[in-house]
Image 1: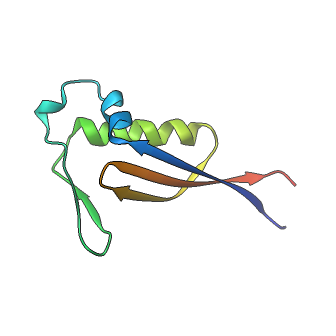
Image 2 (image 1 turned 120 degrees about the vertical axis):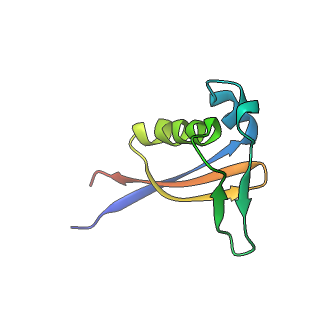
Length: 87
């Protein structure tokens, strides 16, 4: 069986993430630490920012897209998604 895929790239800004938070962000510092090799770490949770990121990713996932990779940039999160195309 030959799988065929289509791809989708999403870009989420820090404003997108802040717009998804349910409570005041001042309770948790908006910090994502990234090293020189591209590994990123969140500050200790629970954190309204990580919960907002989950909501953003779940929205795209509910449309049938599978997350392939996510990249954190200073003020953006870029998601790479794939979806199987019916043959």
